[in-house]
Image (cartoon, rainbow, N blue to C red; front, side, top):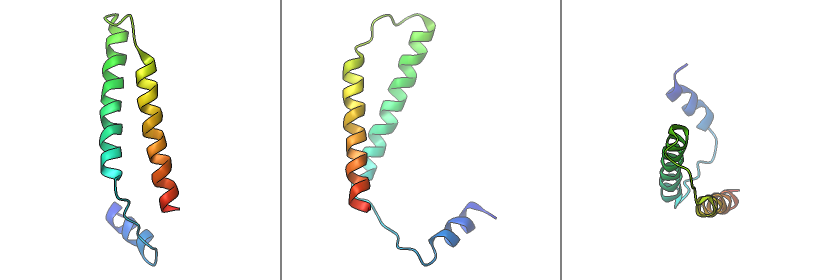
Length: 75
């Protein structure tokens, strides 16, 4: 079964909900993932010794809160 066939079968008879604002959240999530990968690479190379992780944690918490809000709107 192809992915397209599977998605069609799963969607038959189901309500399909389009979530507005998800594109911006996913874009931010991808950007933070790239930044985290870059920081990890630099740390593993020994080129990064000091990390202001409080800002990273705060931004990630904001992103998680946005995802929770979107999830509650869909539920």
